[in-house]
Image 1 (cartoon, one colour):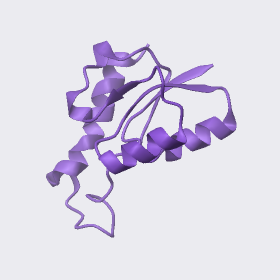
Image 2 (tube, one colour):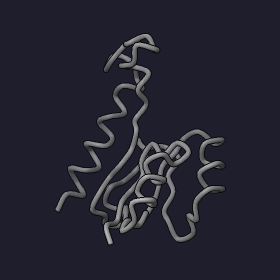
Image 3 (cartoon, one colour):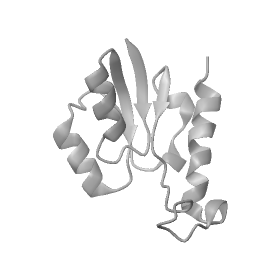
Image 4 (cartoon, one colour):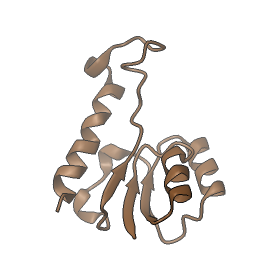
Length: 107
């Protein structure tokens, strides 16, 4: 079983695909939007999983061990549909939260 952490979970797009593929177990998730979190928790059994509301507050040393980190960090900073502020837009810097967590959790 491949264990994963679902960061910037939204309503569970990555989780949906992993569940359909089979062989994956979610150890936790992170989503700041309360409506997306509510939808996520309605669609998936999250009992026993850790939850974080803000990726910037995650202490990687407190996360359960996992093999895979998946997440769609906010893309408005880079998307043609947004203002394309890139890393100058605070949302664009959230990518580095994935890198920060992965650097500590890598095995």
